[in-house]
Image (cartoon, rainbow, N blue to C red; front, top):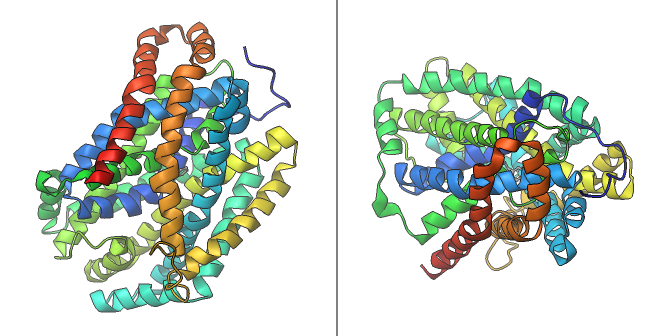
Length: 450
Ligand code: PHE
């Protein structure tokens, strides 16, 4: 058994509440904004297959490891690592918390863009008359030294408001309200998109794999996308796992649910975007501008486009918000659990700090575009350090820690409680000890040599 928890902690109220909150963390800009443009640049269906393969082998195992460590450790990632025999391994948890802070600093900038774009969609100022006007509208908005910074601030205010209210009244309640709305919006949008004349070509591009586009870099992109999308490698899911009741629900089932919802939304978002892009003869490999530049021109041409434009940017904003909440919760949980700080105060102070650290990311799209380190602007640098480096590395260390160091304690706690777990636990242990760490190293090395 682990030592008793330092103070009485909040718990998820219901199983559905937990699944929706965890799915809210997983489903984010990664699914709706990032996944489709990555697929568009990396051979469509080929990327989809790679991504699904990695998600349902390595990704799901790392997710299970995080949830179990949180549940059995029964506190924030740093405390949980310590309670499960951490020693030097605890450093990985500290790293994760810092990385969560850094991810949120630029994630919130893009979150701010989604809020601003809801406003533009409502007022009909998306600039979608043609590709050129849409590009100029987006370009001059993100390059503005003031507006996107203010929206980044507004986005952080929303995140702090939710996290400050606590696990049940804040995070769980937001998930229960926002996630069903997200599913509904996505359904409406995808039904509209796949019934557009010409959508079939997009679906064919998306589902027919072109393996000639697959290189080592594609595999790395699929791997880091799988981790990013499942929210693993930083401790966010450890934190959410720690709010599970001791006599908990069936953890393998919940892990499967969250994984299925996460990849289900990504697949659907891809379907939505490629149908629309092909129906209107646009380029699927438009990169990060796909959501903010290509789609506005499509909404302009589409019957009822003004409505679908608002729906799409609300969808994007909701997805971003529930993910951002889980990022802020990582450092907040640490200060609340380990230092006994007040939740609301901590969330506010961290929120201000994250806002400030995110400002260079915002300015890197305009006035500070020339300010680079190793040729990377502030936002690219933060993205590289976290999504490409810290998250796969964090997952690597987490697997080794869970599979080799914490395993006896995890097994004792889980197998006594969830009796039927035997076979699943055995497979998971094998993946955590050998398959996942080797695959992560192999993929990173092969990709870098490519
Ligand atoms: N999974 C989120 C997304 O897809 C991002 C995220 C990463 C959230 C890590 C929390 C932790 O957008």
